[in-house]
Amino acid sequence: MVLEIVNEELPETMGGSADLTGSNNTKTKVMANFTASDRKGRYVNYGIREHGMAAAMNGIYLHGGFRPYGGTFMSFTDYARGAMRLSALMGVPVVYVMTHDSIGLGEDGPTHQPVEHLAMLRSTPNTWVFRPCDVIETAEAWELALNTESTPSVLALSRQNLPTLRVTHTEENLTARGAYVLREASAEAKVILMATGSEVEIAVAARDALEAQGVPTRVVSVPSMELFRDQPVEYRAEVLPAGTVRIAIEAAVRMSWDWLLLGERGNEAKSAFVGMTGFGASAPAPVLYKEFGITAEDVVAKAKDLL
Image 1 (tube, rainbow, N blue to C red):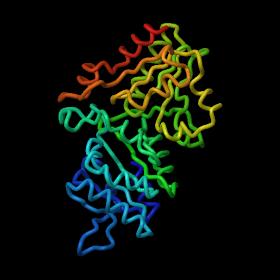
Image 2: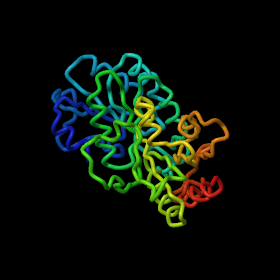
Image 3: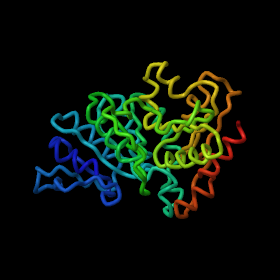
């Protein structure tokens, strides 16, 4: 939906996919294929060549005149890793559209379900990792990715349909802050639920349940840890005040979350992580989320244990 607008307005974009166009949704109506007979096409069918695609995108940007982006499944960042690291080293602002970003992709099973990849990408210097929770955050992430001149971006996008959670209109690009209050507590927050992507919906449901039980609960969407880390300390403290129970929710491994869960509060801070500790399994997304304990009910139970 975002690319339909972006590609219409920006003739310099050059898209592509590593043999997953129909799944990545990276080709839009205005794009024809770049082929041996049509050099004016703006879309490249890279084939099952994730590393080749990433390396080619680096070269396309360095050539000048284009803003390349390319898609594949999130788990296949393993194959593109070498060229993605070079994007960061060289300061090349290409955009990696990595879909099917969690166990939520379902029946393809653990070979295709990324659990460690977000942590790996977030640990890479000079790389922005965006995991938007809805179409609004996705549009904001694209705006940021297309305006930087020195940082590659990874858009981690879900397979499953997601609701629009940004219900309050604002002119500000809130994703640029890295994290922000998506749902405020009814009173001074006792619990703060942090989440990204498809799990923000779970955080909102858990917040509603806790509020119904008299527990003031705030939901913080964290579309970009890198950009939140760059915010002034006063803003970070405003979003994540001291003295609260903090729970992070993400269908991936815990690594990369501890600085938000604990911060400078130490290991005695009341915090918990709701996510993965191992590989996934083959089953429909709702079954997997229940099996691995990534549900609103699980979040509510952990919050009540910590209060």
